[in-house]
Amino acid sequence: MTVRVSIDVDQCQGHGRCFSLAPELFAFDDLGNGVVRGDGTVDETHLDAARLAVANCPEHAVSLEEST
Amino acid sequence: MSDKVPVRDFATDWDHTDPRWVADPYPIWDDLRRRCPVAHTERYGGGWFPTTHDAVSRVAKDTEHFTSRTVVIGNGRPLEDAPPAPIGVAPPISSDPPFHQIARRLILPAFAPGPVNALEPMIRALCRRLLDALAGRGEIDAGSEFAQFIPPAVIIRMLGFPERDEDLFREFVHVVLEGIDQPVEQRIEQFAPIEEYFAVQIEDHRAHPRDDLTTYLLTVEVGGQRLAPEHVFGTMILILVAGIDTTWSAIGASLWHLATNPGDLARLASEPELMATAVEEFLRFYAPVSMARLVKEDVDYLGCPMKRDDWILLGFPAANRDPAVFPDADRFVIDRRENRHLAFGLGIHRCAGSNLARLELRVALEEFIARYPRFELADPAGVTWAPGQVRGPRHLPLRLASREG
Ligand code: HEM
Ligand code: SF4
Image (cartoon, rainbow over the protein chains, first blue to last red):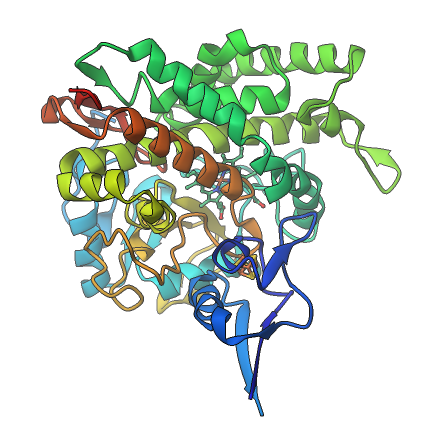
């Protein structure tokens, strides 16, 4: 099973909660909007951080997807 | 404010400058959230006050039905096409789409995490200097002798204005934010010194360009053109107004909490790693800022018959206490991990300065607690809360116990 994070760029307003809580998974661009690092694959050790990013984004812009 | 009729029922007659609201708004909001949840008033020419996280979010994100033409409630309303439309008086906060995006994108790079994080050593040194100046005192006013000095000092440096003008700056903010009940003519008069001061600074920057935000606003081009002078002026006013009272209030309210909750102070002093969640919880619990919108056209919305030019008070602080979103909403939980608070608003007007505000708040608290791991209110009756749409303690008399003591 793989878990991936993604950011809905139309919803993101640059609150910066994702890259503060999970810097291994997210970075930011010149405007301060969140961007996913790499292809967004989340390994076991970062699952908790990924969930926190989802739960703290005020715009509901971060999501977690599981695929097998 | 003094000759106003007292509020009878906040559900049908709310007034955010009512002394009870100013002193302690939370029980009022909780009551309204249970009863209404959108309160109404005939004051200020008519307005609505949604109190749930969901309703506040909906209005904040809806630029089709609501305009940001003005975001501070007053007795009058600016005309729809009053100059400098479509720029608005203080872009981007007073701009609507599509112009808003242009004005916002211009300033975002200056407030992105990279440049903001680079300010940390300067902010830390500033806080230490302020605390050094208070050394040896057993009692201080942490509102007017500490918290108040930090944001203007930071913004003056970002704009590239003379550092000696910090006091003048704080005066300007009072004029803009705390005079909402004064007649329009008087307010315009009060703005004159601000305009003069900014004009002098702008002239100086034109003559001597340097690496600061003022020079950037004067030279940046959109579609091959420099910004209109009223755009440059408006954005500078906005950064002045939006960045000072707000952050001062957040720092002051956080210190007030710690002074009145020794358990939380002790934990933060002994477990500094709690600072990250604590800062977000301070912002949730004591969110200082409520913003307004005007209704564009008559519409039934949130079950309310809204009329064109009615106010909507966006109670981000009330949304942050909504038990539908926050378990134990009325409890300060220093290690709250899931905290989707709206202290910085949401949607296209999300506080452009949120990275800076968080940094100032964190560093101010770190430095204060490092110096004074124990403190309490020296005079509870001496604490005064600012009225209006930015709420925080202006005077905060504290009794200090130093690290040695
Ligand atoms: C704790 C401190 C602060 C709080 C709670 C706060 C809160 C807010 C809120 C709620 C908004 C949304 C306004 C709306 O929806 O109409 C806003 C907008 C804004 N804030 Fe802040 N703010 C703070 C500090 C700052 C600082 C330090 C700056 C910059 C120096 C700043 C600059 C701005 C700007 C430029 C906007 C307008 C953004 C836009 O309209 O696109 N704020 N702020
Ligand atoms: S927390 Fe949400 S809004 Fe903020 S940068 Fe991340 S995705 Fe964007």
